[in-house]
Image (cartoon, rainbow, N blue to C red; front, side):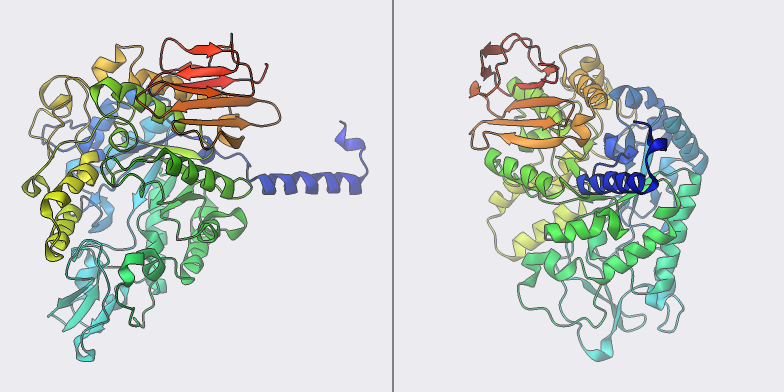
Length: 576
């Protein structure tokens, strides 16, 4: 069509219609939609100087590995100056790097090398709270009239005890008495993590300056830790007894939060080619859309919690629930907004131990199946380090083996409630986030090749059978399957932007769905079972070769397919 020959009015109508379609579909193309995110837990990835603690130079040593995975974005957990009460989520200086990770020059070298391979970098920024060792807090607690006093939330003791607030980590609650100024300060997490006062515009200016500082250094995006809790009602009204059972309703997503995000977008995000995603998405789809719909001018991507709420107890995985949750979120964001798709992160147990089958017989195919799923769904896939290998939970049956502040706090709460502590430890051993923080398993050498020193956390004893070196040499490994699948996603944008349609939703063992647009159509078949599963489809698949198959064989008779245990196949039906 020759657009230059169209009448001006018709041309304007055409452009308006195209824009309307684009806005309705929510499928405007962006690098952060198309990218595969690899979450890298730096202290557990690679140690270059034998202190037992992962660092930037260790990551630099493995740039080729990261590049060959086919990932496009690194999300790295915090590496700022910190007392490490909560593994770096207690920041004492937002512009300084903890010495054990390396120097600012090391960081810049790492960023430059990642960018040279086309890999973006997302910073995990913790600004719901800081460390109590941050200079802001030291000043804030020094006197009631200090200029930094209102950077945090204080309750003067002469008003009596403050209204109860629940703490996620502290069994004693979220108010901590500080005798220096005879007042209580608020901490939704550990006592060493006082909450910042986002209602103070000076505090917000400080945060935006910090974000712009890291963008100038080379950061391409932000993950906002615990940010749905950042805004507080500073009158601190009484909450009803038992309210903490619905923590997000009472502690998260206050209306003022959106004002602060719009301000952040105006002062930081809109000025650069970056994106931001907040941990959590409220209680409802309305909450989620209000965070990320483009016309809201707030954030760019939803990271919801329903995924992590699945399979919290041993043997509790439900394929029916799994299908319902992912189908529900896809439908809700099919026309507007954008979601993340993930199964694991630093706050949860290992993916294959929760959603797959970690037993040696089925670990490889079930991890391949889960990675096939993640890389076939609409939304930005987040892959947690080690899941490209099928790393599993580590067995820690007694509480003395735990160092995580959340695990220890949960143990104390369970004890105080008089729970069956044997049953609690069985639950903790399965679900604890310590499972996901064990060092990367590189090879069969000492400490799995992670460090020649003593690792900060015990290496999983199964590293001789699950490691990078072994899997790189095996064409049928979890690792090589992941590399193939990442390239398939890149070569087929329908897997990024295309529509989603579930097939035979009630099938008890197979998750089948289509990804399609006007030009192409893909069918994904996933057998979430340790036995063969049969599914009969409308199309005839006989004689068709799948794009990817985690087994060497595939049994097809006309339009009936028999899938082996945890078999995962993707068909391109575009030309059929």
